[in-house]
Image (cartoon, rainbow, N blue to C red; front, side, top):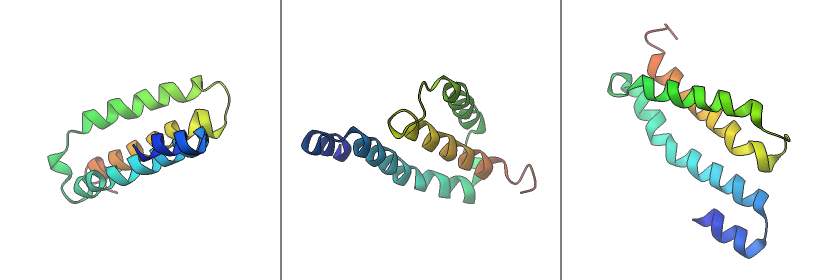
Length: 93
């Protein structure tokens, strides 16, 4: 919501996207922490599917700039962290 308000007030789509990615990143921290501490409580296939979807979207980014790629790069990093958290014990990380 803050990102949309900022976009409307400042007329800066770049900042809105960065705020949205930052907000989503902060919101995902509890999930990453829980997945790290209690990986058996998470369904890994969900994060695999999400990671694969991001991998498939990244090559379709038409122009590499913040507006087009910031959120996808964030999703790639977030899903990679979640996959590591969930599967680290099985993969001996």
